[in-house]
Image (cartoon, rainbow, N blue to C red; front, top):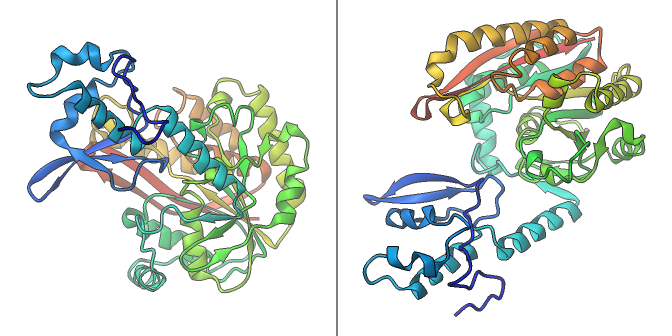
Length: 415
């Protein structure tokens, strides 16, 4: 019996579709194979999995056929009531596009937006959530991997990865060890937004997404610079800024930088957390509306913080994303030579602060390797036209089992 009135409850209406953003991964446990549902948006019941033999039922969830229409295809002894019961089971755990799922999703987003604190979404997965274990993990990392010299005079910004620390520790240590003696009052984050595309109506014409929340990390809670944030939000709409911050809820690109700052720094500092949407439109039309917003936003950063020695910029972005996981029709290994050549040029222009050459490189074939760090890096370089950088690291994570790869690196900028 359906005790929750919002669960799907019909044998005659088309069955609801499976949520398209779910990643279904076969896993083995005690000799049995299960289908594990990874939900990047965090709506589904955590660690949810079903028996592999239920897989064929999932293929029937196309939003067109009802249980009655599927009756001839049900296995022997399987009744429509049993199918409906299982559909409700999937709906209860929020795997289907139904009113029950939508109500839960809306409630989660509204609770996040009304909160004053962002709780880490990556702790316990990419790195230990326990403070003691995490401190040991990071101490061992900085002892094992090569550190960059601490000639920190006139440091203005760091472009660094947000790759999973478990595969990018060497690059992280080289990048963030260059900051360990700094004591800025304020850190402005210009970070890749991976999830704003999930909310197209909310972020239409709003490429810059700021949050007023304090960030709760395992080692410390870092306060937001509310004065700087509200001053930014008070600027004209032509800057393209919004504080509708649901895109921050499950985003890791800022958290992973704060992970290292909270370990290396003992002084008090505050943050201005800004996520930046994709600049695909800029690759098609430089002088369009987005181009104007980027110029206005960059001009604001330059006029307000360009000469401010107490402000550090952290730019969060990886480089190329290639292979079958990202939509290419061939394995990543077959693209390594071309990608490394592309990355070399990208880093060269980024070091030189050459926004024209960087944009032209990205426009060629319209970002063929899906460089997620382009938008935040281009924004920073547009705000600092005379700045030059020094490459600290470059690496590539070869995810062989999925025939995919991600490259990443870091650049230190000085005034």
